[in-house]
Length: 191
Image (tube, rainbow, N blue to C red; front, top):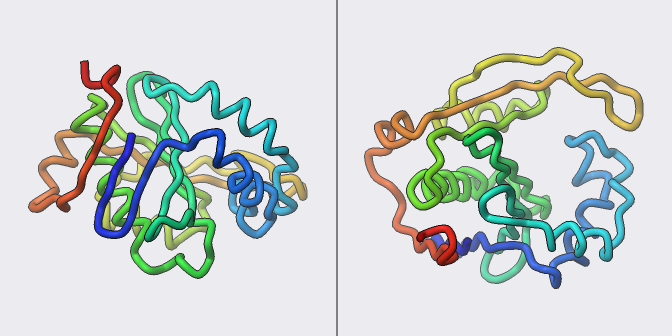
């Protein structure tokens, strides 16, 4: 997938992105919210191997670029016909500028329109109130539950998560005006 919206790009992560992903994933500040306050401890070679298994029909990792410079990552995973979403703006100077909302808007729309998904799902840490505001108020996700003490981070702290979902009909009904974006999808998906 390749999406261009204003000066933002979402593109498939490729082998050449392994060094950048490795730097982000091994940075404890970037990965703390995911339970890795000391980073993941991966190598570029491990990431290259993992990227080689990405498939549009099951899961795909993407690089987010602002004016051609990588600032974060997105992904989706097919979970029983629903697209499970993830996003990280890894460049802290680019956070809280509305990019996450814009990126998710075009990403979700493309997954509904071009990839045939009927439902989007995601979760976030219960402590991440900023993400909850974006998911509920700006994007229209419906909170479907809270899992208390759902996982333990590497420091032994228990974390709770909020689960969200949104159906395609709800998405299309809530969008008065969609952003004008360009989406190029692989032929294997569009056939």
